[in-house]
Length: 157
Image (cartoon, rainbow, N blue to C red; front, side, top):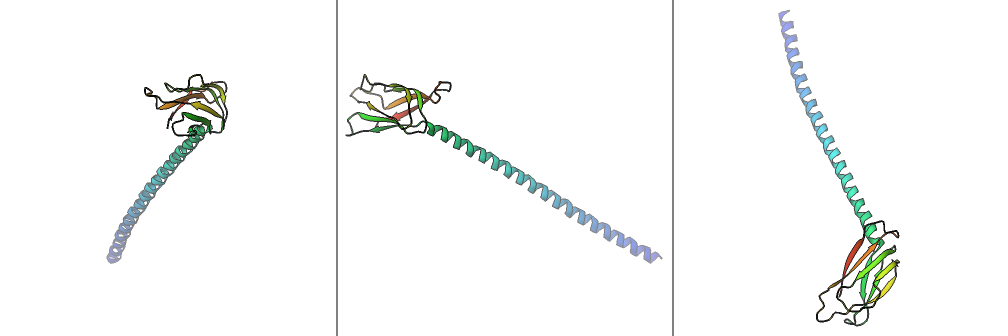
């Protein structure tokens, strides 16, 4: 009987040791699963953040393309003739073209509406004392001028 009790006690110790070892493995597996779940959640949050930033860039780029002014030289290099073109998709309103101290006085530099694909001829003549290197254009995106003014500087080539 003593031997049987001893064998049962030894088996109990072996089973307890196996249970402790198995429980430790289960805890380790649970910890690894939790860490992986955190990494997956962080990756998903980062993906959402990147997608939101990309979408914001797309919206901003679409907004920039609505009105896009270009200043294109016409004819000889120093003829002073330029075409101001709205190559965007929408009209610009209350447009003011500031030519600074460039020549060509008397030309229209204010426009109530500058439609998409519309062009205006500008005479921009640099003289010896001319310090202006660009033309600044200011406009509104909305016809009722409820939006903030936008502006762009176009370099004279």
